Image (cartoon, rainbow, N blue to C red; front, side):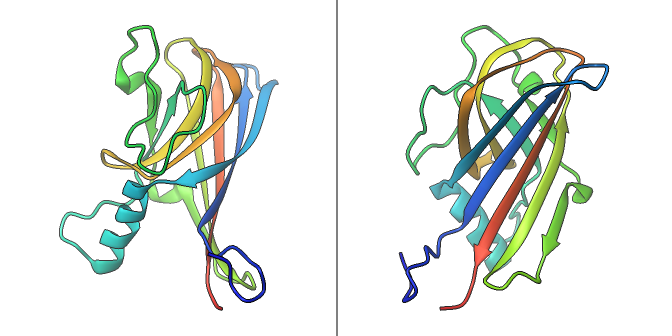
Length: 164
């Protein structure tokens, strides 16, 4: 929905991904916008309402989709190889989040996480934030290889607009 000034009042997010080799050299970068999913909107609604058992965003995951899904998407695309699910994600701590309340028309949440692959992952093309098992968002990007021993930094900026 657009407001009277033509601005899109939807939650907007952007991902910057940086892959660094074991010696710290940048080997790949990706930049993409994300889509908040129906279950993701539910995550926010349950937190807003203080629902018992509501979970905050607590992990990142990677996947292998060839294109963006719809808002009804509930999980990222698994690899064709048999890779354990635990090797495709990383937990987030409270320190992973920063909130900026001084923006003129939105509150911005920055999420920084370092994913350390324990197995080689070829052609990773998507990532998402999760609250427990609920996928909040999906972002799709050009394929990237992630090797065991590398550090993959995910940096999301998510804007929560306010006002008219």
